[in-house]
Image (cartoon, rainbow, N blue to C red):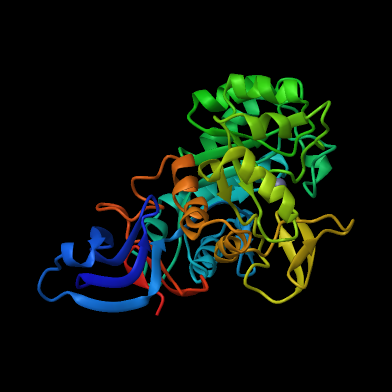
Length: 391
Ligand SMILES: [Zn+2]
C-alpha cells in the first residue's frame, strides 16, 4: 500500500486540537501528524483532502457483546469477524470482546476460542477490508450479584472462586483485560486482589455493594466501574452505595452507556461533574442486534427482543443496546460536552484503561493508523483501520 496523507480541517489527537492538520500513514501506522505546513510526505504519497472534516482516532469500545447479527460468545471466527467489521463502519476500530455470565464449561470454551481468534492473523494482520481489532476480553460475570444481575442468567451466576477465575484466566491465554464483579459477595475481595495481581482491570458492576464495601474493593485493587448507574445499588444520601464510591474516587474510571435510554441526561451530567471527562469512558454495551433491523436476537445464551433499537429480555429488562460509539459521542456533544472531550471519552480514555494508549486511541507517530473522519455534525464520513479505508 502506498503511503497516504490526509489533510483535515481539524484533528483531535485527542489531547490537543490541531487546526489545518495533516497525517501521514505508512504500512498501517501513523508516520507523522501535525499542522499542515509542518508535515512532509514522501514522494508518491496518495493525498486525501478532507478540509471540511474532523479527524480523530478510531473509537475503542471496551464493553461490547456483539454486532451485525453475531454475539461474541458464539466465538466462531465468522462471528468475531462479523462483529469487528460491523462496528468498524460506525468508527470503532478496536474492541474488547465482552462475555456474559454463562455456565463454566461454555465460558471456558468461549474464552479459548476468542483468545485463539485474537492471536490469529485474521485479527492481527492488516485487514483486507476495514475491520476493528479485537484487543482483549472483558469478562462480565459470572461473579456478580443476583439482585443486580440485569439480564445475566441467574442459574449461571457463580460464587467467587479463585480456582474458577484461574481457569478462566488461563483459558483467555493472556487476552483477558477486564473482570467485572460484585465486591460484596463473600470471597469477592480475594478475587479483586487476584485479578489486580494478574494485571486485569477489575471493575465494579452488577453490584449491590454499600459505599463501605465498594470503597474496600477499591482499596484492594478495583479500578473501574462497568456501565455506571445501570445494575448498581441505588444512591441515597445516607447510604450512597457503590455509586458514592465510584463517583468520588479519582482512581476509578467509569463506563457509561450514553444512548439516551440507559441513563437519563441529568445522571450523565452528574457523572461528568463528579469525575471530569478524563475518567469517563463511553461504551456501547452493544449486542448482536447492533447494525441490524428490529427483531429477536441472541445475547450470550438467551434471546433478546429489539424494538426501535431498544433491547429487552422476556421480563422487559434492558438487555444491552444497539448503540455505536459515533452516536455516543454525538450524545455527549448534544449535552454540551466540548467535542474534543467527547472524543477523548471514546478513544484515549478507554485505550489507556486497558493499557493500549501507545498504539490505540491516539493520533501519534508509531500508533496504528486507526482513524475516523467525521462531518461537522460528527457523522462518520470515513474510517481507516490500520490504514485500510472504508471508502
Ligand atoms: Zn452488564
